[in-house]
Length: 366
Ligand SMILES: Nc1ncnc2c1ncn2[C@@H]1O[C@H](COP(=O)(O)OP(=O)(O)O)[C@@H](O)[C@H]1O
Ligand SMILES: [Mg+2]
Image 1 (tube, rainbow, N blue to C red):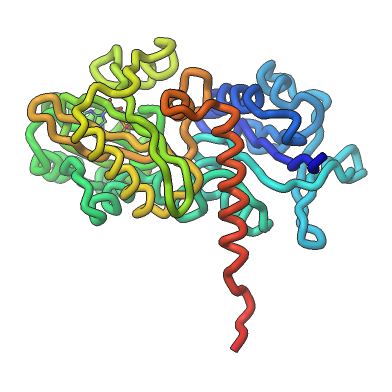
Image 2: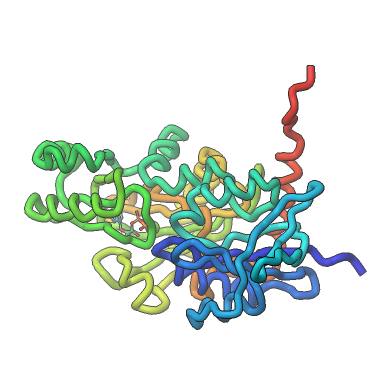
């Protein structure tokens, strides 16, 4: 019998997407083959405590963290171990071979926790520090994708300080980007939080101020009547793509309410696109994945302008949703890769990326 891999799942987190993370983690746990993996869990509370113990996810779901212990990861003799603190005692729980951060948004998907894993020398699922941080900022992602030759809608980034100092100047500059409608977004958030579709000048000021509440950087972009196309990518240096899917939002755009309160969004998988369009989406997805130095997985989103059929790159999610209704696993399922095999691939890719990183010389040798 081969030895089981010791897998640590981390969920929750200091993010507006904490609740979504718990749903994603439940689906991941359900799909993991217990014959292959020894699974350990750490839940991160809203205020940043790391907790471990028995049935951590179940307790987080019930919002009752009694009986859980503070968790820590320590690198000893070139291996990382999970410890728990019981009163004044530190108890060694298990060695960890690989981590799956099932965390969305701030402090989970933005490179910060990936930095911690990199420092600890841990193999982990998904993009590294650079890709995670770069893809978290919508404006930075678009700049990189555009430099790699992908079409993006015209946009500009404004700083909150400038906005608060002279909002009229920002209104004027925004109107130079394009005619209305415009989309105003905080650069560093997900789940459509703080996003407004602006139909005229009257709506622009409140939209700018709203976005400025959530971020220092505000993105203003041309709005189109958009078909929403999503595609899943899996791999490291030679990534594979799924079939693309199309989301059909209920609201005027794919809003927060639509994402989390209207239940399962209507989706067409595969997306009804021509062969040529499908091929272009696949090519663009691979180009974007590489341009942003992504690893393991990403869901890449595009718009098709309904008025003229033009395709535009929109954004990359480096830790896409993994809930039972999430597009990332659904697109793989439709492409012939069932959920348990998808998890196996992600874990193999994490180990492969660690091996690749380990080839880097850390000590100067002449
Ligand atoms: N430029 C745009 N034109 C048309 N619709 C847009 C535009 N930008 C965003 N949207 C709508 O808003 C939704 C959320 O915006 P997005 O940039 O994807 O941010 P998030 O990270 O919050 O998903 C999109 O799915 C789409 O419905
Ligand atoms: Mg989006």
